[in-house]
Length: 416
Image (cartoon, rainbow, N blue to C red; front, side, top):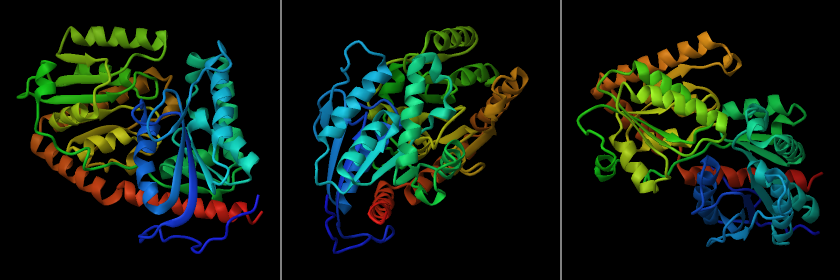
């Protein structure tokens, strides 16, 4: 395949007004409106901004048909383990990539194998974004069994063959290089996740909250996320036993990943609900409704034990809400301790140490109480958080930096 010469070799990622002569294919499992995690939010926000600075952006997605993407049902081979079915869908995605693209960009292990195959077949560079890392999520073996070995292999193979790896935080970059030491550090770049401050903004409406029975005159702590080991929700529920008596807890949390996690959560939730007001909303709410909830929260709680960056913290900050979060992964790059929220130290290596975990939960509760008792301080942190989102995490800035990585990957690929 011949490579089209360019009139522009690279755009300035900090001062880009012109379209770069570049055609991109995005490979993803999630794409609006079918989104359930941070990677889907990332892709949904990134694509329209990439289109401002590139010639064209093709999107290949898994699942239901939807506007703006070529969709591929996850149905082959029929009846196979879910991870094997993903690889079958990856082959279909790779086959559908337009032949004239200049760069392929895959998101999560679900689509990494499609990017690898497409890159080899079309002889174009492959860029992967590390939203998470399989070696750092060993609890997935509970869900996937042998499928976890497949997902781990797909990620490792794609990362080591990629022309560039994008990490969504400096902490994630460190983890990538530790997990895959054969990678050339010069090919691993940091382009952080972002937030749309026009979508997530302070919203004075309270109808959603009153519908859940929330008392608007009492402190409110909110969690938004999945019930997985990664998100640490069980730790929050246990910590809430030490919240001040008038503090309410609202959990916007989907169904647990496994029966074991469900049993642990149900036990903790049942015990907590005997002693204090706690509301669990299982259905996924529209983003506008989540914005209302985040705005009214006194504190947004993020007890994750693993988090590459944590878009949900940005969403809360953009709604002018203070954050209390565990200091893991990329979270300290988002939440500035003492300025936009409070960070609680957590060591994943001590996850099986009961005394350490209990201490973490107690410290988490203490930091939540410190802010619910001082609403003036919490509001000041919320305002500082929104300003930080505007200054540091705009999607236009992220799109420009991503295009710059594409250009480096193209140049490197065709110089080999």
